[in-house]
Amino acid sequence: GIHAFSGSLGVPGVAGARYVSVEPLKPQDSFIPRHNSSNEQEVKEMLSLTGYESVEALIDATVPTSIRREPLAMGKYTEPLSESDHLKNFKAMASKNKLYKTYLGMGYYGTHTPSVIVRNLLENPGWYTQYTPYQAEISQGRLESLLNFQTMITDLTAMPLSNSSLLDE
Image (cartoon, rainbow, N blue to C red; front, side):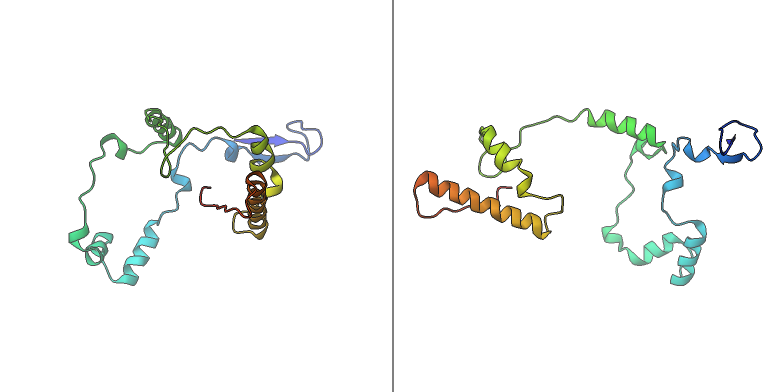
């Protein structure tokens, strides 16, 4: 783990070299060091503050038996895994998923949106910003988009007014 590097030439063992540990750069293939759980001392402190002798006694006093459930028999899924092993298993399970067509609302129709509409209305960055939807800028962009849509519909239909909604987002 420790390597010597010169401050100017990068030649090991040179006078004025500084030592740098490369341990933090090695793969950390374990979830445990990053887990934010209570340690033994914190559990003891919690139990002394609440007046219980064990976590089980605390649970017995606070969770009614009528809503408790026996532990699920999870088989191999209860064994500890490294992060990379978990990701491998997770990807194998996810690969079994089947993709189906989504039918939203009262019905789904495979419609074609002309590229000029997609490019100039839906993908036009003038209608939105990088901010989240509660920001005033995107709200203003949405209102302006609705107004443009209504104006286009009134022009196309020669009707005096038009309705539009963000409910179909």
